Image (cartoon, rainbow, N blue to C red; front, side, top):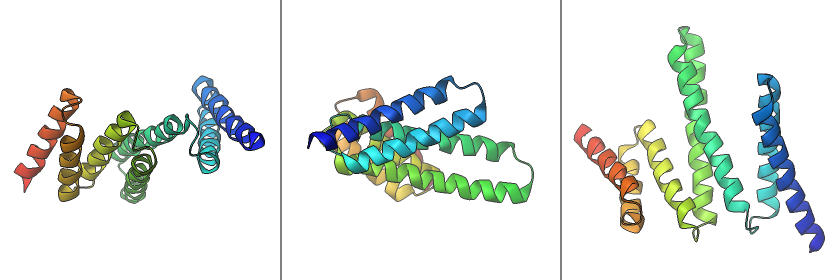
Length: 171
């Protein structure tokens, strides 16, 4: 209905406004709050209107944010000296990887007709499996990417092949 369309567009636009506010906020705590609000709005938008033409882009923004959180936890983990804090950060880092895999799997499951989104999802899930040292799964998903899309982007295909070679050499 028109009311449902209005609600979904309002949620998406509110998410965009919060995301923009996060990028402009000078106070890091406010930026984090705006970003958190944006992600809540975006997730609600996706739960209401997964068929909206902007849903794939919103899902990708969520997935990329989760991917960035892996690096943030990794940097904090590498800088931390206290073993108890390192243990907690390692758990959070591992959860961030799982969350990222889930976000990209959602893209694969719901936006299969958008080759650009799906290609990124394959590569990023492969990257996450590499971080988790899940070699078989990483090789499998990267090989699947190469079989389906390897001729579409030769630069990404070359990186995928290199990652596979490195993982197989470590066995």
